[in-house]
Image (cartoon, rainbow, N blue to C red; front, side):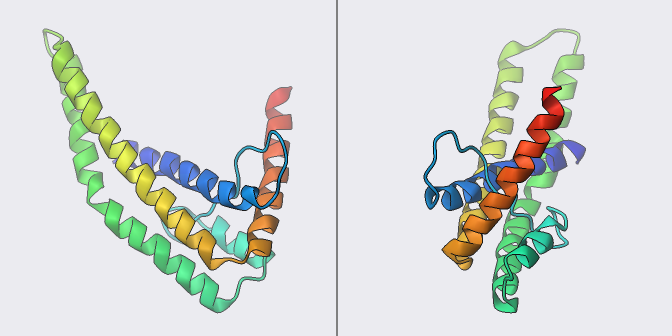
Length: 159
């Protein structure tokens, strides 16, 4: 369960970067990486989305649409939680076995990788749909806020 939640967090970052890429395309500039962390309000991805939507004066209709988009993504991915847990249990059992079966470990790793890719793709599609709800100006403002946040984070880790 914890591993699946971590996967979803990683997937969320990938999806957020995809949304940032959409916003960044409207803003030319070398070396731009990343973008806004689009997170479903009060749901799987925390409460940051509300803050970002406040910053861009999103309408109630926009908020409702974005909430529905991420709610659908959470619903679509909820079935993967148990499957992911079982894969992690299989992997742990393979490594704990008296004899290491490299082929079996690789097969489970491939299944896990496929599951990660599926989740990442679904979250990316959700973030693209959410980006389409916002205006280009709203996306640009979110991208600017996130660029500043990334710069602050980078300066903390530089020293």
